[in-house]
Picture 1 (cartoon, rainbow, N blue to C red):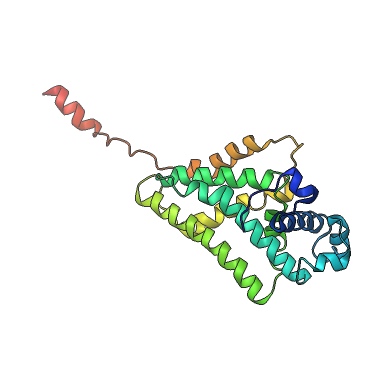
Picture 2 (picture 1 turned 180 degrees about the vertical axis):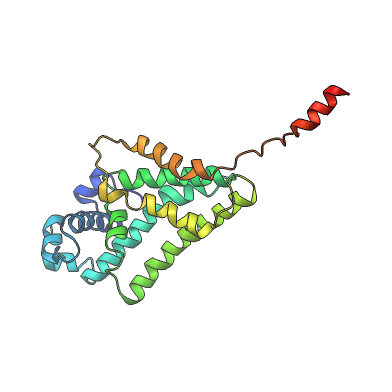
Length: 224
């Protein structure tokens, strides 16, 4: 499914079943974000979508399958808006910085409720559904590990464990939804700059200083 945001007309009643389904996923994501998965009933979601409960079940198999669809949609949005945008960047350090910027902007945008649900309801899915989403998440972790390893190899950052670096990156970015407020004292661009500086500043490789010659050797040259 494409992660394209449906336009205003699609939300008001498009004849395209795909647009209608996307609108249902986005509305359900908003309700679940507000009330939590356990607190949001199928009736609540149906009413928010402007449907009867039976009408909602015409579009979904079950509540858990709806959550799976929302999380897959959230991953589609993430891959389209973040991962696919930075993969072509050749320099691994610049790739990582751009990835952090785009990930932060995605999480801080108010419409990204599907991405928020991936973070907040990560343990709610069970069985094959959980395995499916976890496999998509692991691809992101692998991308980060590989990028950090490339940056080390190319001398762009100092040697560190790429796995530790990848999860440090994720730990900073994925917790933002818990505390960031769009109307707060810190705006999203400032947050990007601060987090990039905190993570990448200490990691960036410093040029080796020129070796200093012993003082006594310099004195001998002067006496000569």
